[in-house]
Amino acid sequence: MDKYIDGIYERGWLTNNGPLVQELTRRLEEYLRVENLLLVSNGTLALQIAYRALGISGGDAPAEAITTPFTFVATASSLKWDEVEPVFVDIDPDTWCLDPALIEAAITPRTRAIVPVHVFGNACDVDAIDEIGRRHDLKVVYDAAHAFGVTYKGKSLLKHGDAATLSFHATKLFHSIEGGAIVFKRKEDLERARKMINFGITGPETIEELGINAKMNEFQAAMGLCVLDEMEANLQARARVWRRYEKALPNNLQLQDKDAALGYNCAYFPVVFESEEQAVRVAATLKENGILTRRYFYPSLESVACLKSQSAQPISEDIASRILCLPIYADLGGEDLTNITEIIQGALSD
Image (cartoon, rainbow, N blue to C red):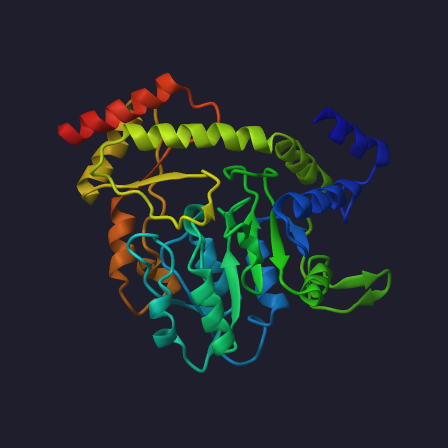
């Protein structure tokens, strides 16, 4: 870390597309095997900039985007904030991603985009969703906040859609404390977005776009470079933890179904219990033993009042009520992991 931080002070260049931001951009494009990557200051702004650059938000006519209710609230609130109405479509009960079979029935003359989520890094049915987008002339923006480094059929999952967005929040597999990125399909969309993240300014006396301040600074980039330096070792360690969990947990718990062609990043270990009562009891028992879990993603977003959804999404609501994400990190030792799984088994047998 010192070599990156010392360089910032030596140069006196703290933000505005500094050398470390440029270096991190190059290295991430190489590591992720993508082009047209734009770093931004957080994952929510990544979504909003993508909407603006692709013409999904910002128009005069009322707009809608089809999305999933089983996700972090920023997926939907970023649409609502930009005056695009989120229209929720239910999820597949096994993959927990947006069900493409339900999308077309939700399309209206106001629909401008589809915003699916690669939930916990699991790939959506990208072939089906991309085809629906092409057939109906809709933009497709994948919320890939969990999908850092994930591949599908040997290629980066981030190459699908008109854009894919990443979150580099401190809780993510790859992080820059706060931060995010957008991977665009087309270079012209990247160039428009690049102007937008710097207030629309293109020169000392020139403003060409309606913009905002969404730039990543040099200290964020320094952290990102440090994390990237250790990424392969981190991935290998997390994969070992993931496999130990899979072997040790009871067989009656539901794990997420993944395509055989998916190159998974082991970013999360979500488990669905047989009932909400079981999930709540396990979470409480683990907490009593100093182990924190998260009910990702609860509640199902169609039930959130400020999003003003008009329709129930029963599969999302059911999965959301019964899910827990268990702790997973690179140095989670075998003894600690055994302790977690034994506590779960004990809570289930009570």
